[in-house]
Image 1 (cartoon, helix red, strand yellow):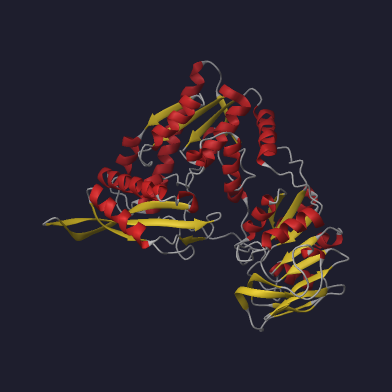
Image 2 (tube, one colour; image 1 turned 90 degrees about the horizontal axis):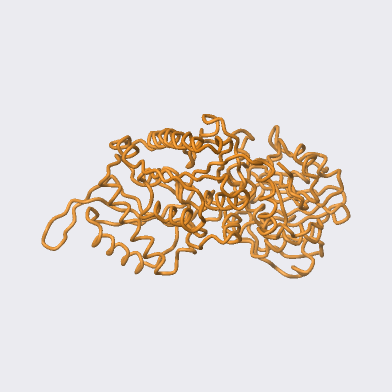
Length: 524
């Protein structure tokens, strides 16, 4: 696939949980960047020919045996380099400085005092000022390499900012990429645009034109099939591809009976009626729910749904070629950039699988189709921006993430038609109340969960023994970490009352106040 024509920044990943935030801040500044793990950074550096490099934080210590390091070429090329936290430590260590453990650590909010001027914060911070930042470090630099000088300090980071102005190497002990460093986004933008000299031309309007050209180049006169899920990723991918190749695209919606209230109809109405995109709508709910009834293990649920989805999707795809216009050669998927970034664990090895992926896998291999993944360079917020650029309605563009297995994994324990219907109604009321309160766009993801627990209740003069409904809402940037949403209690009380009054089968509502980690966003 054709490389983007934009100026580029390379982000070397040392395993920080917030490395993706660095990329997002750089993208927000209008500059294209890519994340690559430290083991493959040298090859990425050669391929990308970046105008600057950012070294991420990470959980390792440069004092460890076989500690991760940056490629020597990064420092030898004469390009601007920014080292963050572990990035500062490995820079100091690799260039002849000293890093030590055993000093007072610093975690959370801190204040740096600017002691000397630096190109890193020119026009943003002034000498003598103090500014809030976010720290997360145990080790610290105790001796700087030759050519470096201290520019700012904090109580437990005497080298909070240290730079070599001549070589344009800038290091911070704090994390500018996180929200808790209020000026962090400005610092990163200043680094990539003003210091590295990158053109801030990474926009969704430009991406749209480039993506359409790439799709046409890849597909030619071939036919493409795309599975629609009701989510924003597949919707945006489908509209983009349709704009590129028109009726060469056929979409397939497999309604597994596990979607939200009226969701299948909304998808059909939008794509078939509004966009006039060829769409096959398959009601396979009986097949899926019959196979799932009584199944309680979450991974088994996922595997059943994944396997049946492939069967149904393939059967419909096979029919498409019978219209005399040729067999489909390509499968479109709404794969995003976080899905293709190689994550780095503490040891540099593969990360632990917490649960199998939400999306259905195995289609390309089994169907012998080539993949079209026009969104694989984008983060979620960029996909939403592209959707707006393409004219998709806000109801689709701003839709909360929804897992491929749908309500099946929001119904812990055994699945039944009755329980799914109860959950669907409760979820619809919950989302309706969120929208009425004007909170939908402030929440990253919200949904109801029907628990495999029944409790005693009183309604009127009668005793009930019904299910418990749990409400979940989180704020997040990319789903990698999340915090529970802090509702007003009056909102929760009113929502709970409405669910209990309107949904037969629920007599108790609870709210989930678990963050991620230690929990996951979904319950299964």
